[in-house]
Length: 548
Image 1 (cartoon, rainbow, N blue to C red):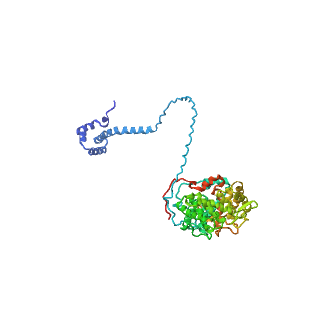
Image 2 (spheres, rainbow, N blue to C red):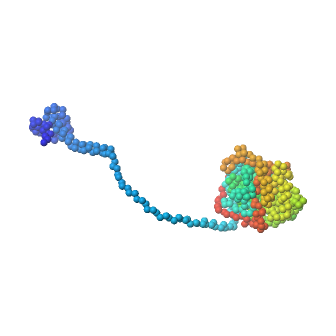
Image 3 (spheres, rainbow, N blue to C red):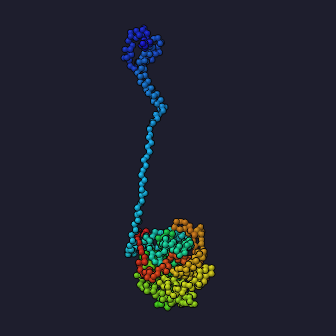
C-alpha cells in the first residue's frame, strides 16, 4: 500500500501545527493575489518550516487541475505528429479479366448519292435604269500625272451598276475569265505584261483633266478604247479612276451641237469620240454617256455621203475617204452593239449603205484585191480598213474581202525593222484585226509574225525608275511604242497614238470575238440590232458618293 503524500511531506508536528492555526481555512478565504503572495513567501522559508511545506502543498493543489488538462493535450499533439509519418495503407483491389465477346460484322454503309440542285434559269428583265441615275458632274478629278497613283475614287454617275454587264456576241471575251480563255485559244499567251505596261504608261502620262495630248478629245477617246478593250471600266481597281476621269473629260468636251471642243482640222475626232462613247455606254450603261453617244452618232449618220462613204468633217460630198470611213463604221458598229439602234434615227440604213461606200473604193490587180484611199486600188495600206469594216458589216464572205486578205500578207507584212508604207502602225492596227476576224491559217501566220516582234519593240521603263505605282502602292514598270514609220498617220500625237494602237493590237485576242463565230448572218444582224444584245443583272445599287 502506497503512503499518503501528505504524510510524506508533513510530519506529525507540522500537521498538528497546521490544524492548530487552521491555515487551510484562512487560505480558502484569501483572494487569488493574496494566496499567490503567501505561497511565494512560504517557498522562500526554510524547508523544515511549516510555511515552506504549506506552500508546497498549495502548489500541488494548484498544479493538479492544470496537469489534468495539459498532459492529455500534449499526448494528443504527439499522436498527431507521429501519425503524419505513418505509411499510408495500401488498398488492394481484385481485378478479374473478362474476354469480350466477338461482335457481328456490320454491313458497309453506302451513302446515298444526292444530286445537286440545278440553278434556276436566269430571267431576263427589261427595265429602265436611266430614270433616277445622276448625270456626270462637270468637274473633272484625276490623279496627278507625276505620281499616277491610280487609286479608284468613289464612283458616281460613270458606273452605277455593281453587277457585271454580260456582253454577248463580239464583246463576250472582255471579262477576266473569258479574256484568259481567249488568250489561250487564239495564241495570245505572254502578251499581257506588255499590255499592262502600256496601260500604266498611259495612266502615268494622263493629263490632270483626264485627257491625253495632243489632239485631246481624239487621243482621250482612243485611250478609253484601249482600257475598255482590256475590260477596264470606272469600277476597275487599278485603272478605274483613269477611265472615269477620261470619260468625264470627253463628255464635258462635247458641245451642245454634239461636236467636240479641241477637234482636229479634218475632225477625225468626232467619229473616234463617238466610237469610244458608244462602247463605254455598252460596258457601263450610264445614261450620261448614252446621251453623249447618241448625239455624236446622230452627226455621223447625218454626215454620210450619198454613195455610202464619209468625208472629212462629216460634211456630205462626193469624196469617200477610206481612212475616215473606217472610224465612222467602227463607231456605228459600237453603237449597234451597245443597243443604241432605237435611239439614233437612220443608223441601220446608214450601216447598210456603208457597204456600198467601201465597195466603191475596192480595186483589183493580178487577181488580188484592195481598197484605195479615195478610190479603187489594190495596193494601198488602207486595204485592211476596208476588209475589217466589211467583216463587221456582215460581208466577210464577199469577194472584196476574200481577194484582199491574201494581198495584205504580201503587201504589208509585219516587219518592225523594215516597215512598208508611211504609216505602218496605223495599217497594222487594221490588218491585225482583219486577220483575227478571218481566223484559221491566215490568223495563225500573222499572229506568229507580229506578236513577239511587237512586244520586243516596246520601250520599257523598269519599275524602280518608272514613277508609277498601282492601286496597292506597288511600283510597276511602264512601256510605250514609237512607230518605225517615216510619216506615221497619227496627227502629230506621236508616242501616245502609237502606244494606243499597238496596245489595241495586243488586245485583239479578246477585244472582239471573230466574225467566223457569228455565222449565220442572222446572228450578226441580231448583234447589230437591239438592246437584247446585253443581259444586265442588277444585284445592288448604292447611293453615289459625290466626288470632292
